[in-house]
Each structure stands twice: as structure tokens, then as C-alpha cells.
Image (tube, rainbow, N blue to C red; front, top):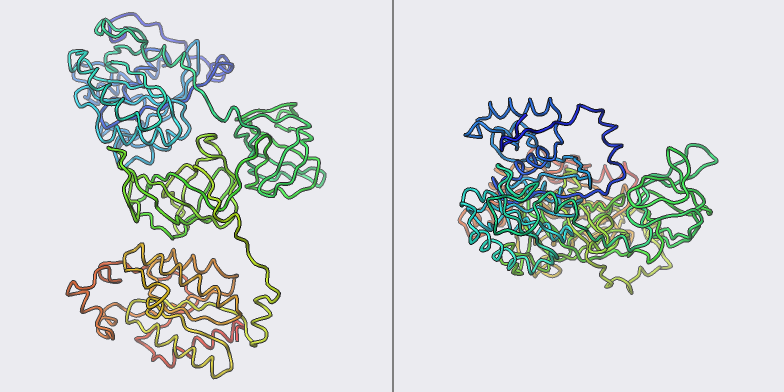
Length: 637
């Protein structure tokens, strides 16, 4: 079968795939991504690489010819190489890449795994996914368009994900008559931008992925270009991996107990080597032991290295569980606060103070973004003040965790320093990031152990401690019912106190407004104050609109199971607006009260509240009696 240039092309036989892999198993592996703006030719480039390096079987070529004819995307009747990579129906219909498409191929010199990543801004999260495991980036630029905003955004993400080697593929040079001045101008423009990103090497190559210029060999159309073609460069480039100089990093994924006589710790080695007899440290506890065996499905090993899935056994019975890290050499960082770069990937903004879940290899921890130090303009690299991060925005932030996290800075070890952020309610991935360094501000701050505990304080009051969280729209009747409950508890000789939203804003939260960010911080402060009341053995009645489920879930997590009671004061907005005891709805309707809950700021009603109070069907006195009855049933009073 002839190739695009009309030359005869000998196709590989349809061999067994396992034999194909075995033939290449001892070769060095290079992982790289293709990235850039929409329609720059990323999928076409990968398809061309597969075609010219003779990686396609007869049936694949036949399907490509058929699909190219039907797609009509190539006007001269040639092959549409992008169809080899764009697998989703929506991708083929629109001529774009949506998902990350991975392809494996090999030459006589090296094996490759290439990730074709999407160019559209709304799929930036997919591009970050592809970059997170890559050693090198092939960044495509349309020679007609030059450096675009998405080019800069992808370059920044490439840098953020620790990639320091970039191939600047100036594609579609045939459409600018292979003009060297166009090429030189784009290269100079990009290098000026890339200087501030920490990208170590930029190798610029003029090419036409469609026609094969400078893909596998030098093109006659660019006699002025003296460098290597793309494939020969990829075959010989050497990548420095900082983690190679670290000691052992072994995150434990599973405690392996097949029987009473065996306890092993299973996982994949993230960095370094482990040998039988090595002395290792288990973190975060800091206990040391010796490796007694390295077990695999195929038998025991004397030594194992990065990327291998093994089970380790230790000489001592020490506390090791999922999320622990077995290490040697310079031990990783253990901290509850850290500085990080974050790429936000959700339509809903990231709000400082809100609780999310951070996942790092087999570890997970509750996390708050305690401070956004600045966000970064991807075009100018300017540092901008910010109170939130929106979709696809990048920021430098301080993180506060609810438990110690074991990590290496991402610049030293990508496996031990890259994380994702998950919404605790929906379990959706909303962000990703890289850990920069630990914050030592909590190193000298410790919990003071007191002689009298919560249970003793509550027992002397004849009650159990509890946090009753009254939530509902403004005007629903929260404060009215909470005040009546407090009065009844007082008459019963119980110790209770109402934390009212309005009262808190006269003191503890007097510096906060009513934006989503300030609402999150307001509830955080109120919840921390309420926790102190619970620790004092009291029944605290918290009366706040508290519009977001996430913050109410955060408050629940501050106290022991059974101590948090969510009370949903359920009143329709129309009824609240009729009552309008403080005239707030009228002001909001007149435009004098922005960010008002229920009008221009959303309220998320509870889904599984312990108590639901219908203020339209019953009077406040009856509702307060229902709360008291619940407290009796639960043994709180």
C-alpha cells in the first residue's frame, strides 16, 4: 500500500499482541502528551506517527481508509489520521478531542505511551490528567495563528505538572508556504513566555502532520531547518527524573492478611528501591523496622524498584494501614498544613474555608483552602488577588488538613506530591494540585490536655452534650423556635445556649459580608465556637441560615457521632417573604441587599435532617415541644 508520498509501504504482519509487547519489553519507555489549542492538529500528529512508524495492522488501515472516506474531513481524498485517535462519536462528529486518548507504540529504539489531550478550554481537566503522568510535552501551534491563550494555559499546566521538556511543534507549515520567518517569530514569542515557567528545554520543530513533513525524517520543504525530525528526537531525548535520587517511597494501598500467619503491606513503589533486610520508616508514626520479604504473584524478589506492585513484610508488628508510607533515605514530609498550586476544574467556584477531601495516592484527608495567596493570569503570569478560584483558574493556596499528610514536594516526586480535590457531598473531582512545601506554623501548637473532659462536664449538668443546628431561610422561624427550646431546657434545669446568626455578626463575624466566601467563613467560625460549647458539656442551639450543605456537613464533622442534630425549619420562600420580620426581602427586591439567600444567592435544603419543622402547619410552641421530645428520645436530656 502506498503512503501519502506515493511510496510503497511494507505493513507489519498481524502478529500476536503479547508477542509484540514481549519483543519491546526491555526498551526504555517515554510517556509524552500532545497538547495545544483546538484544531492545531494533535490527533493528526499522533495518527501520522503511528502510520509512519508502521504501527498499524491491516484491519486498522482498512478501517482508516473507510472512515476517512465517510468523514469527508480531508478534501483531497487522503487519510484522516486523527480518526486513529479520536474514538468518541462526539469527537468524530465535531472534529475535536474531548477525552484523553492513550496510544502505545514502539520503534527499534524506544517504547512510547502518548496521551492525546483536548484543546477546548472546558476540557482543561482532561488535559491536566494526561500531563500528570507524562515526561515530555509536544505542544502544537498552528503556524497561521501563533501563540494563543490556550497555548499559554496548557504551557502553564505542563509546568505545574512537573514537565520540564517541551517540543514546540509548529504545525501546518504547508499553509504558510514553509516560511522560516513565520516559524522564527512564533518560536521567539513562545520562548519569551516560557522563560517564567521553569521549562528547562524547548525544542522547536517546523512540521506538517497532515503531509508528514519533519515527522519521521527531514523534509525537503524546510531546508533551513537543521534540527532533528520529531520521531528521531523522541527516540533519543533523555529525561531527568528528580525522584530517582530519592530513597524508597512505598504508599500502602492494602493490608494483606490471607491467613493468620501472614501480614503484608501491598502497593506500588512510587520511587526508589527496596531490598530484603533494608531498614525502613513507617509514616506518619515514625516507627522503624526491617523488610523481611518482597512478595509478588510470581514469587519473592531480592530487590524491587519504582513502578513495581509488591507486598512487603516487616520484622516488627507495628501500626501500618492504608495510607501509611513506608520510606527509606531522607524521609518525606509529615504535615497538617501545606502550600500548594491548585487548578480548579469545577463549574462551581472554590471557596476558602469550605471543607473538601484531598486524595494523594492512597491517603485521604479533609482539607480547607485556608488562604488564596494569589491566582495567576496564564497570559501574563501576573499574580492577582483573589477570594475564590473559578473554572480553569490557577492559584497558589495554603491548605489546612484534618490529619497529618505524608508527602514529598511535587518538584522532587510527582507521585508523592500530586493530589486531587473531591467534593465531599457529590464525590466529584473538582480540582487538582501540586504540593510545594509544608507550613510549619502548627509545629509549636498542640492540644492542651485538660484534667476534666467533656463527659464529666456534661454529667454534672445531668445531660449529654449536643449541637442543634437550626437551618432555614430568613424569616422561617429559626430563632423563634430555638429561643423557645432554650427557655424550656432552662426550665428543666438543663444548660443550653443559643448562638444566633445576627448576634454573631455583631462580634465574632463583624468583619464579614454576605458573599459566598464570607458565608462559608461565617459558618466555619460559628461551628468552631459551637464545638467549644459542646466540649463544655452544654446543649448549644445554633440558629443560622447556613445555606450550603457542605458547611453544615463540616459542622457535623466537628463533634462526635450522635452529638449533632440538624433541625430544618421548613418554610416556603413565599411564606418567609410574607412574614419578612426584618424587612430584608423588601430591601433585597429593591436591590439594596445583594447576595440575599433565596433570591440571588442559593439555599440548599437538608436532605436527611434529624428534625424537620413545618412552620406553616404548626405554631412555634408545638414545634419547640417536638424538639424537646426528640432530645428526650435520644437521651440527651
